[in-house]
Image (tube, rainbow, N blue to C red; front, side):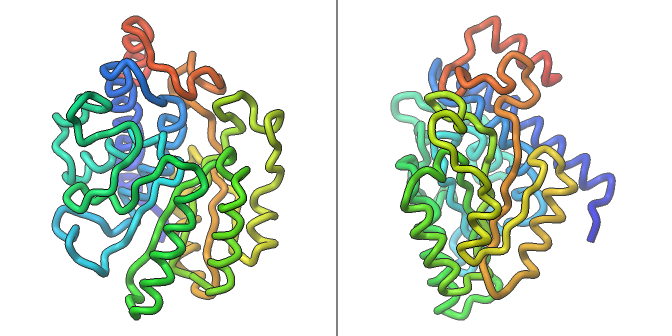
Length: 276
């Protein structure tokens, strides 16, 4: 079913809130990774607003959906959607990366926060997600879906392709990975550091249903997620083409904003551009 105008606007508002939250959180912490989660905001908002079945009411339900943030350093955006869902108190976001905070610089598995996997060591997230999907299949939980994120840089890890092999072998139609493909990683331009080339063709070669999608077009992302739900005999990979720092002019497509906090003036400029 196509998105209504109201639902599209709700997703876009959620994505903008993610961007605002990320700027505020990383600025307050004076450390963190702003560029990635700002670039991922549109597909994260689409997933969490329209598709994933995780809420304060069902956190203890073993049959609920699961989510694994494979690229764990982008967790500021993840914490924002958890707050938007009412799972985290919004006032807690400002404690990000501070001593004693639950909101660490990489997600820490927590039943009460709805965080299903500790991530940060790149490559491990998709393996865990496919294990969750296989477990749900074995238990007969047909309504349970498992979603994971990954990235083009993380796709340089061999463990990603071990997981891709296993997920296709077991025909895990309940598993969807959303790959943030922004051509940027900590050391610079991905295609110069270690070119992963055409990830859609790679996933297809491993036996997945795979599509390229504009990672900033919430209608296209929603359609791709709906299509993934209809594919029952193999896992799905959405290769989301994004721009790091999307929406903040001085961060866009700049590798330096992979892991640097904005100073006071930069934060003020970014928030103004986002309409905060």
